[in-house]
Image (cartoon, rainbow, N blue to C red):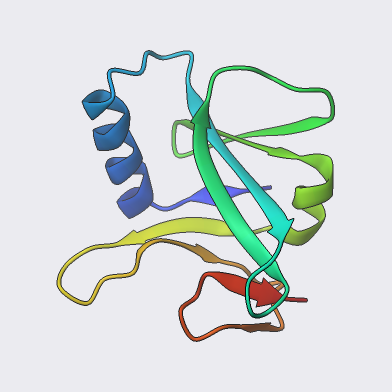
Length: 108
């Protein structure tokens, strides 16, 4: 399961409205190789399902990831922190053994 906190849901809703995206769009998250810790999170809006997508709904929002990424993201919560020293979107990932100082990459 993938989860989305209220803070992230509110920001995603705001961004989707700002970009005039309709209800067919959803949040797609994935993990790719890269970053100083070895793996990097990616997040985007999408409206097309792909083969082997893992589809979740939490907090009234559809979240989609590919099967390979789900192995790294299982039970992860997408969160948002604003303000002067806020991180923006970030992933609270219980599978990450360590992450880099900037929070952009992680290792398992």
